[in-house]
Length: 175
Image 1 (cartoon, one colour):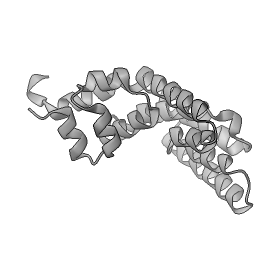
Image 2 (cartoon, helix red, strand yellow):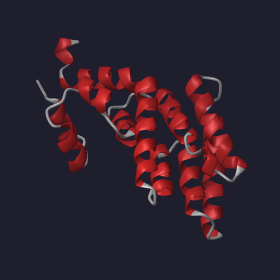
Image 3 (cartoon, helix red, strand yellow):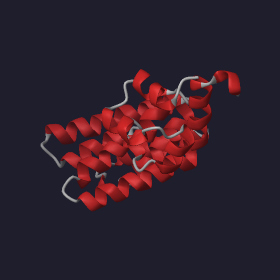
């Protein structure tokens, strides 16, 4: 039987996450994790599927919606959520991602607010939790609050999927 800690090593998790997880089970990790970006990363590593992962990322990105100054970024968030709910196609998701990426690139090129850039990437369902980190670096309490908020979002939308998938990987004979 492979332990969860061994699994984290096998997928090259950062040492901080491995140390935090310690000897916890996957159930304990999902229940107690204080960082949405860690849960999104784990969901991606254990391959829970694009649709549920995108749904969680879209909702995480929505937590920094107030930072988005470009309609393309806002549309990308909405499209990510719609794709996750099954009401938008992969083609629509890809188009929204490309538009949000273009908005982020244009904002960065114009030396606009870095939060717009990070939020647009997140809105495109790429790295949703990282957007909040970029904005909240100056306010540690707000960053912690956003990480907890996105962790709760991940638990709601993909927590059980992460648990099921990781358990099937680390101990397939007991499922």
